[in-house]
Image (cartoon, rainbow, N blue to C red; front, side):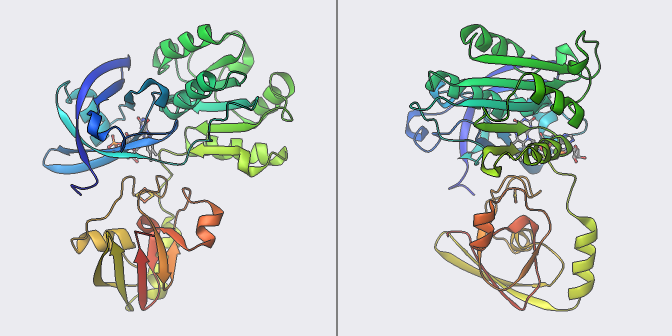
Length: 357
Ligand SMILES: Cc1cc2nc3c(=O)[nH]c(=O)nc-3n(C[C@H](O)[C@H](O)[C@H](O)COP(=O)(O)OP(=O)(O)OC[C@H]3O[C@@H](n4cnc5c(N)ncnc54)[C@H](O)[C@@H]3O)c2cc1C
Ligand code: FES
């Protein structure tokens, strides 16, 4: 993957909360073009941890207007990369970093007066912060309302930065902090976000007819609840943008069913990537295309392996696959034949997948 990853030096590590580090990268002048990004995009980082190459995606929490590359990594219990980043990684060390990627943004439009609403929980604030800061800075009439859920005050990631933004854009930016494990005087702000609370929010502080774009990032059930709530309120789906960091996992039942149906049949798989082609055979209904290709020494792009980041996106040119989880792709892309190869199980004799398309 040497042509896709670049070694970047860690220039600063700050603690935003006791278990979340904000890591800044030094991007040399000659790589700044390749590392140019949109608010809400992410970097894929790779490090050797206890002898194993581990790669994970992290949203940029800086704004492209700052010309800074920062990610916020929250330590997860027993999490390989997040523990390494919070406890082992030091300033001056280098990480392998893939250029920015992702579709969790809308274009900045200085000529429009847009009203935005965002929902974030925990580390889900990272892309949301980048989005909020960028639109407030670049669009003189934009307004933003943020609903941000955390267990306690000390666990609020990027709190100082949010407060600074609030002071800078007092009339255009509002933050509502929800706490799940600490007392709040206002009942609405105590506990998780629920459909009932969404009803109250949209009766009191947000007018659904006045909002142009919605962003959400946090646990899957929260994101799905928000999406379904907004759809019920007849918000156009193009206005609802969300980023998942993780899913509940591949659909185990669907995987078992495909394995039983196609057991014993073989798929002949051709992978087109970087102008080259490779070919291998795999049992239908077993490994997904990405894993099968990696086992055959292919050098392919991937990050989350959970159907959310889209790094492994490719076009199915020939054959059939069963797709287990598919959050990352737009309906249009699916219609055009794009698949997430980490979630695509071969179910036909001949399969051709193009990563260059
Ligand atoms: C597009 C994208 C952007 C992301 N941006 C960020 C970001 O800005 N900040 C950030 O901290 N993370 C972010 N993530 C999540 C990140 O990529 C890792 O999944 C996370 O840090 C856990 O990796 P790990 O190696 O520490 O844990 P692993 O060793 O992979 O997992 C350890 C255990 O924790 C569970 N787990 C994994 N992720 C989570 C989670 N998020 N919450 C609860 N349990 C989990 C796993 O199921 C497993 O049981 C992002 C993910 C994606 C796909
Ligand atoms: S590797 Fe993230 S969607 Fe496949």
